[in-house]
Amino acid sequence: MQIDIQSRDVFYVSDGTAITCETLGHVVLGQFPFKANEKTFPFVESEDKLAELLKEIEASYDRNGVKPLVFFSMVIPELRSKLLASNSYGYDVLESIVQRVQDDTQMKPKPKLQRSRSVSKDSDKYFDRIAAIEYTLAHDDGITLKGLEEADIILLGVSRSGKTPTSLYMAMQFGLRVVNYPFIDDDLRRLKLLPEFEIHRHKLFGLTIDPERLTEIRENRLAGSDYASNEQCLHELQTVEALFRREAIPYINTSSLSVEEISTRVLERSGLRRRLL
Amino acid sequence: MQIDIQSRDVFYVSDGTAITCETLGHVVLGQFPFKANEKTFPFVESEDKLAELLKEIEASYDRNGVKPLVFFSMVIPELRSKLLASNSYGYDVLESIVQRVQDDTQMKPKPKLQRSRSVSKDSDKYFDRIAAIEYTLAHDDGITLKGLEEADIILLGVSRSGKTPTSLYMAMQFGLRVVNYPFIDDDLRRLKLLPEFEIHRHKLFGLTIDPERLTEIRENRLAGSDYASNEQCLHELQTVEALFRREAIPYINTSSLSVEEISTRVLERSGLRRRLL
Image 1: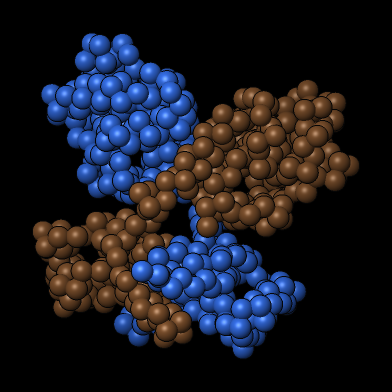
Image 2 (image 1 turned 45 degrees about the vertical axis):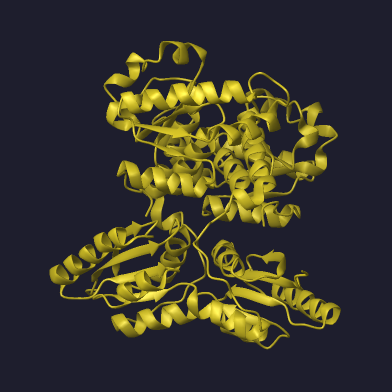
């Protein structure tokens, strides 16, 4: 059986970072069978910038004989109408929803240039976010266990179970202060929680992973090592999961989850609130 | 003059992480004058989970006498219709765009449960992303200058000009390997580039910031210190900007920009391509 796979040129365009357009576009395109050749045009706030984009749209149309898809968000009416008049299928990612919120709330929107997180209007949030990132960096991978009283959550798990990326994502996206601590040989032999963690038991959260996946990840790092062997991975995971169960530490399996999904699940299971909403 | 500020309950709901709903919702709500009391319900994939949400929606309606706003994305038809039947204003963040892409491309979408970045189907991207995060962590704040040949970009700037959060964001979101190096006293006195950077000149990118903003940020960290004083900040910034100009290093001012905006502008100015599109 042959599958008809076509490819399409896709542009993400915004007067801001275009991150919202990309995020939404990825999810929409994930439902369609064609391959997307993607390119992003952020900060399209001038005729010059727009002209560059329009040139690429025309080139794409000439090359493929089919209109490229454009996921966009543009506040300036003149630029918007020129984009809409081009040889492309344009999808305004905000328009229809803004219109409906206006109808439902009977309030008038004030369109403004995209600011994903505006610094000037919200300096406290900026500092909270930076402080969370710094705290999390300083407490990555068990570097220090000082200042645990300031932690929002403490992630535990064997090496390569996803602790560091999850910690950084939670700090960056949710503004949380995250400690992460790897189980190493000594801990595994003693099968005990460090005394430092005792008074912070309610903050503990475990990450685990399937042994096959852990082997794959460790092989990618240190091929052929004992560290990456099936036996070692299985042993570490069994030991740590036994500890989680015995100590009633909540834990999740990260095997098939993205960093975003792990972070969101940890947040949900732990009952923590996002600080940056 | 008194401004009529109302507040509204807002829910972000998805069978996935709900990060797309949040992102889009924030931008939409940024255009409206009311205060949003926000709460996120990720992974609503079961009747039980939905029931929790419906209870909160009813409670919100009873409390406020006005329907809460719900930004959602739900694939399962039964859950979707129950949500739509609740006392809320529902905004499907994908539906209208998916419909239009279907019309335009004449291809049929396959709705699927939300996966922000699916691990299983895309293991290479997962490893690329993790490798970028690790490289960037290992090269934060001038920790080491080994392995610069693997760097995608090298950020330079004085202490607190935004290098670390920008580096981590670029690694996490775009999959780039970022080195960041702070100018310290010695560099500032010599006003010279480190010899290590010479053969990587094309990767250098500067961050600068207004002296007033730098003072504010440093005061937030070390109030009353010389380090945070106006004179010191001004001196460091003048010195570094002179270096950037003399060495023809491109640079941007981060004063009023969010981490997302700085990252996107650096990407754009440097001509780097996102690795995770």
